[in-house]
Image (cartoon, rainbow, N blue to C red; front, side, top):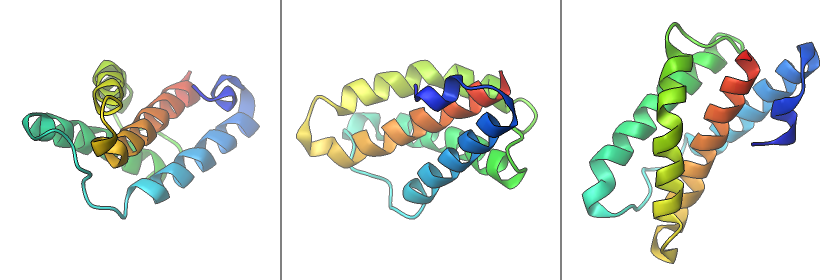
Length: 114
């Protein structure tokens, strides 16, 4: 987790919101990355769930949608497992980068709500 995610107050909120926006801008335009074929459906679903929460958070000016914090918390173990899985092979480097971004955004949004 980024050190800014441990900060408190309005400035910390703005920092987290800006950081999520930057990560989202880097994440959004690309196609779905190469991932192991047998994991593709599950990882695409995970990406979609987290992306929906991130998009709503940004669209609402840093306020998560109803139930989104719970969704993000439930996704954390899967995101961490995806990062571990994708980090095992250089073939999935783009996937590793993408899922690290998703993990970072989820952690920042959760920390922002704390």
